[in-house]
Image (cartoon, rainbow over all chains, first blue to last red):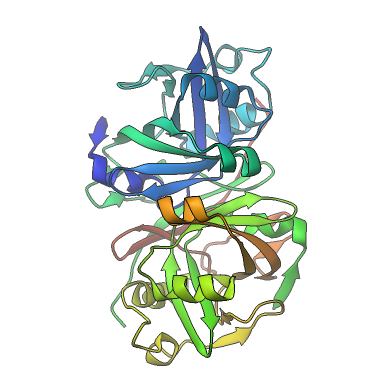
Length: 186
Length: 186
C-alpha cells in the first residue's frame, strides 16, 4: 500500500542510490525520462539534486512548470525504464506508447508512475549557474510516498524474491539490492 | 587486481549509487569520512558531485588542498565505513585508530583506502555558492581505478557470494547488489 513518507524521512528514499523516473507536465503536455544521477541533498526541509540533460523534453516542461516528480522504478519495470530513457517525448506521448499508468500528485501537476516503489513531488529551486554549467538541478521535496511493505521509519527493507529498487550499471544493465547488512561498532 | 579505469568510463563507478569514503590531506594531516550522497555529474571529462557537511575536518583539508579521493568500500568494510562516519578526525588519527591501510594516489596527495573496490582521484572545481548554500561540491576526476575482477569496460558485474559495493539504507544498515538484470526493448 502507498503511504505518505514523513518530510524528515524523505531522503531515505534515495540514500542507497536508486535509478529514478522523472516526470514533468506543462500546458497540457507531460513527459517521462529515466535519470540515474539523482541523490538526496538535505534532510529537513528535504531536498534533492539531479542531472537532467539540456536537450530533453522533460527538462523544458520542468523549467516551464517549476515542478517535477521522481518515481522509483521496481525490478519489474526495468524494460520500461530503458524504454523511456531511450526515446524522446518531443513528438511522442511516451505514456501512451509504453502504456504507462500514472496517478496525480498531491502538490504538483506532474504525474506519478504506478507500479513504482517510492515517489517524490518536487519543486525546482532555481540555480541558473549550475543548471547551465552542469545540467544540475536542485529541488525541494514537497511530498514523498512509498510502498509500506518495503519502506518504514528506518528506510527500505529489501528481501530476496520481493520487488526492489533498480540501480543502473550501464547500457541496458541494472543491479538490485540483494539483502541487508548491519554494521557493528569497531 | 587494481586496474586503471579509462577516463570516459569513470562515471560507471558511481552509476548505481554506492556509498563512498572521502579522504583528504593537507599540511601533514589526513582524514577520512563516509559520504552516501555522491554521484556522477559528467562523463568526459568525468566529474562528480557530493555533499560534505560544513563541520567536517575532511572538508577543511579538502578546501585547503583542493583535492580529495573517493574510495568505494566493499561488503567487508561495513563496520569501517560506519566507524569513520561516526567519529571526527579533528583530534583523532582515524587511520591509526581503525587500522586503515592506504596507498598513494597518482595525481593527488590524499590517500586511497586499501580493500575498497573502486577509487577516484578528484580535484575540486570551486563553486562557492552551492558549497555554502547546500554543502554541495563539484570535482573533476583526474584518475580512476577499480578491482578488475568486478569492473570491466561495461561497468560493474556483481555475483552472489563475491564482495560488492555497499549502499547506505540509514543508521547502521546497508544494502548491496544482489545480481544483474538486463532490460529488453519494449
